[in-house]
Image (tube, rainbow, N blue to C red; front, side):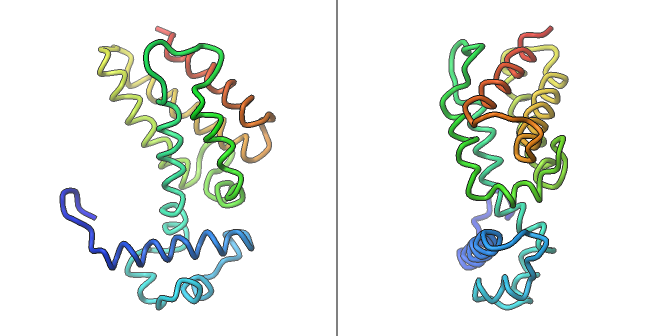
Length: 187
């Protein structure tokens, strides 16, 4: 979709059906076992229609998981005033807890350390939001801190999803929050 140009409602419905079908397929089997044939059958669209909208299953999967990126960025910025240096805003543990239904899919798209196709989108969007906020307050170190915040959060999230970082959603939210507050406090 081009900025400022309204999206064709039929195309939006088709992409929504494909995203829903992918999430349903991934609830039954790992992403790497999902085929385009079974996906389009479940979505009720033709194979050619799939390729009009997506280059491959990974592109569809990243699109289907785009909400998790928006939710993460919003959860990290869900505070006003002076942040509590110990406890994350309520939106952050809620974000971590809300990942459970599609954990396997997120693991497939977000590799340990924060890489992978979903990690790249998360890093890009989180860095952009952090950079804008740092520049708004006139921070000279805005690009450096924005990159560090994005890398830290994406890495901790990915490692937690892969079982490399232990803790409940509340514990990991508070721990990553403390890291991010420390990064923002550094000069």
